[in-house]
Image 1 (cartoon, one colour):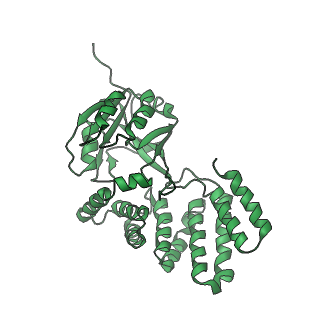
Image 2: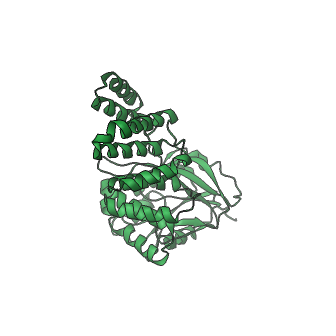
Image 3: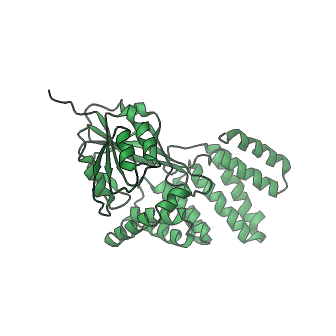
Length: 352
């Protein structure tokens, strides 16, 4: 009897992920028909845990190339659709969206929302929209921060993934790995804006302001205006330039980009932070030039509200985080009633 090909398969590469892989597989199992894990050289219990959770585990010799490993894993699948997860990710909401995928893919890639979470010591939190539901035949390209190629457009789904790879513990565990691969990739393709962007993010989450600012500047120089990750690039670059003390460049970038992001709370949140730093550095000009911009920028965040549809959006910048900052500003200025009003607003919107 001929076996019907699965509708959706989970495809994962992993190494030394014993602490998290069970969570990932358990979250996916109810929504997929196969789970394929390609182990790239674990010395812990990752393969055994994956097998115990119902995954098919295959070995692969690591060659310092994420795309090569991803493609080897995809080659093991005969499903119409492949859900690509990492071991530090999990299905957080609406796994039923997988069942609603058409039986016959039309070549488009399914885009999911990735919610980054961090512990108190972590440096990264926010949302990304990533193509993670791939029709059969699509493969990856790129040694690190690899991207799918071979599709014909994309569509957004309601599937939400969680990701805790930016907690302090996970950052320490993976220190140096991505940075080395990114440097090698840039050496081979120095005009690749996306690699510069990812290297900048690597420096930023590891609190290296000068290096982050340098790499963001190069990414901005090379990135096309329509890059799907440009929103995150601009917002993060403003923050990086500010943190590195390059205030004039940050102001210039913000001025050049403000018309492009009229409905981004993240942009206006970063703008308020930037002008507050300008006020700190030039207190004689603060009341006249900088603080009014700070106030209006954070109020604009509240007017816009949350925008989870924007790439790299950070939850709270359109609600409780902006309100908290306004409360602190008014407290500093001695405006007690206004401070109390925004403190109450921040408390209402803050996750419990």
